[in-house]
Length: 69
Image 1 (cartoon, rainbow, N blue to C red):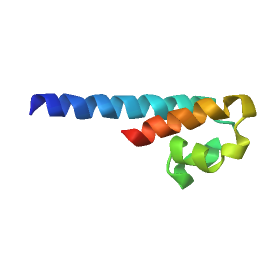
Image 2: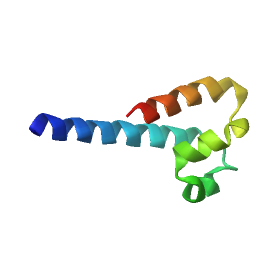
Image 3: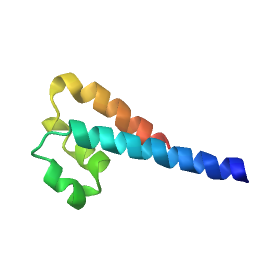
Image 4: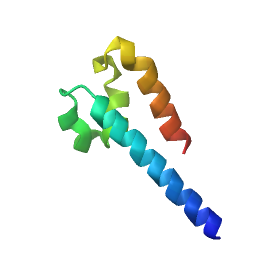
């Protein structure tokens, strides 16, 4: 039972880390939309066209990793 609790805690920590990374890398113009669209991950996914082209693959990868948890 303790292993399951620590795994859930680790998952939450990983999700929070990805959220923080996306929030940091998100274009400033979409940051005000975070509370409206469900946080940094959902907002960035919905506004992918606003992410610079050279960062889109990295952002898409982070979003997929987030969703896999």
